[in-house]
Image (cartoon, rainbow, N blue to C red; front, side, top):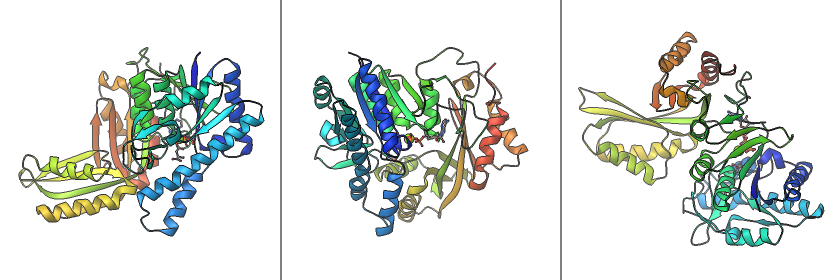
Length: 408
Ligand code: ADP
Ligand code: ASP
Ligand code: MG
């Protein structure tokens, strides 16, 4: 019997009517002869509201308690979803991450999935039930509750699809597919029918909030096609899958904006082997996410300024860690800038097209947008710009690469 995973994001389960609508969709798949696993997010803005409450009662809420708190959001929606399905005359059961055996590492609020047990889910599916799983949560070996990072219900869904051998992982959301850029920020953005894993992975990693990037990693590794589509219609959305046709024809597939960034620069770091390694080992030990690294040599190469970008929410913590290191090791002052954005362009075709970077930089300069720093990888070019220029920079590069027009 074929198996399908359907994930519903917050807006798709925001109220009773929407929960019933999602329930009907799952029931339809069941009546089509499929085994159905649903992954459900917290209702509407619940997670944001819980984060806000935590900050009202405490300046720095302990991360363990954040996990206790945030994991409740999904527990509410899975129970309601199971009730809605029962009410429509079908069998269903809700399961938390812990109940189904989704085991994570022990990093509070940013845990990674280590293992997923198939036993409980298979048992329930074989008993004819629709299984409803709480997104974005799991437990570690000792039974403590962990969450997987904001937006990670996508990852729960893709990981389940991978271990259960699902034919497809459907992501139901409030847009009707993947666009060349966030349609809320670039009204001219164009919907794509298909995008390959590598390009989607980079778009997600550089700020396309429509998918959690680790979900794409699971999809790619286990060859699960991911269908991103609207929960309001039956129209096909965008398929994320292995896809080679016409891949090299366009240089740039999409443009992204990352807004919640901060940069840290450590000045006068000794330019001797091993120093950068030690610095970044210490940053990693503290679970600070490093987005891009920037290094400049000064004073004839005797010293370097080493900088990196990180999530804005980790900026203060990163600053304290770097200041401690600077004091211990005799570096110069450490600077935190919380007013930066990153604009990126993504495309596999970049590898075989020339002049992509110069087109991007020229467009930004003509728009009088100053570039703070540049980073590149094989299929991505990113620039850090001032926060106030971020949106305009995104729209400028989207236009420069004619992303609003279908590829020739
Ligand atoms: P959900 O709650 O269903 O997980 P999200 O808010 O996480 O939904 O993701 C959907 C949103 O992602 C859209 O409303 C859209 O504004 C945003 N988005 C960002 N980049 C893109 C893109 N390239 N294509 C489509 N949507 C995007
Ligand atoms: N509810 C969580 C969040 O808002 C997880 C998710 O929706 O994917 O981040
Ligand atoms: Mg999401």
